[in-house]
Each structure stands twice: as structure tokens, then as C-alpha cells.
Length: 180
Image (cartoon, rainbow, N blue to C red; front, side):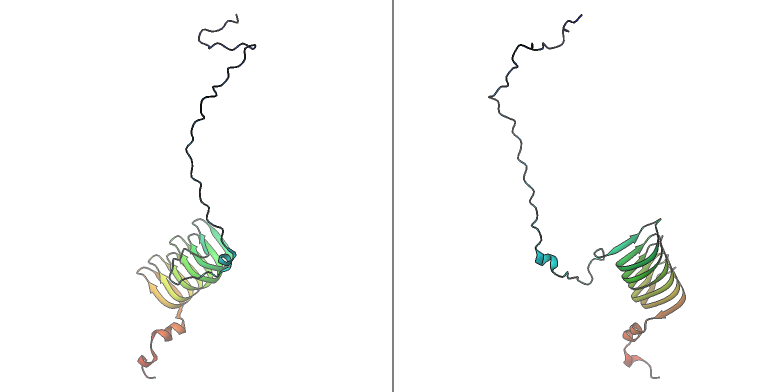
């Protein structure tokens, strides 16, 4: 009834001492893993030093807000370097350098920016101190003021449109103006 099966190894009896491990064998050799060198901690002087920004560098740096497709945002946005609208925004935009509206984006409200690129729809008050670019799929309606403008074939602009006077005077030297 309680017989040992033929394929099982024999078990040590309880009275027999356990077999001692062979002490002459060496433990397996593990390859050494180089330690990762940690960069030095920043000094207080480097943390407190003012950051120098070079004009014309990559626009991906700085404070950027992206309103993705399918997202609705309403309210006020302040101190954003670049606003990218792929969804729907009904906002007032303050202290922003650049506005970009993707083909799927829609912006309703007001803003004053340095430059704007419109591929979607903009409705409201828009002041662009430098360059306003309306792409072929872009539609702008409302009160628009700009420093310089470029409209691709197919782009639409409607409403009250005027050029900012400082750019109008700066682009034409006064000696080339016809006498009044």
C-alpha cells in the first residue's frame, strides 16, 4: 500500500545526517556591471543664473499649450508662448507670442499675438503684430489687424481688416511717398 515507486529517487531517512555541500566548489563568477556615473548636481550659481534665449531658435522650447483634437477649452489663457489649437477653443488669449490653428482647429474669442498661422477657423478679434499667415484651408472672420499678411490660394478672410500703422510706415520710406 505505501510502497516506494520505482521511478522516485530514494529519500534520506530522518536519522541520517543531511549530505554536506561540497565546500571545495567556488561560487559561480558573475560578470561585473559597470556603475552608471551620475551627472554632478547643479550648483546654486547655475540654477540662479538667468536663461539666455537666442532669437530664431527652435519654437519647441518654452511654454506651449496644445489643445488636441476632440478637446473643448473655454476661458482665459495667460502667459503662453505658443498656443496650438487642434480642437475647439472659446477663449481670450493674453501675453502669447504665437497662435497656430490646425486644419481641425476652431478658435472663437480674441487675442493679440506676435505671429499667427491659421489652417482652421478663427472667429473674433485678432491682432497680429508681425506676420499673419492664412493657409489654403484657413478661414478668418472678425476684426483683424496685422503687421504683414500672407494668404494662400483658397484661404478666406472676412470682416474688418486693417494694417497696424507702425508696419505701414516702417515698410515704406517717407521719401518715396508721393507729395500730398
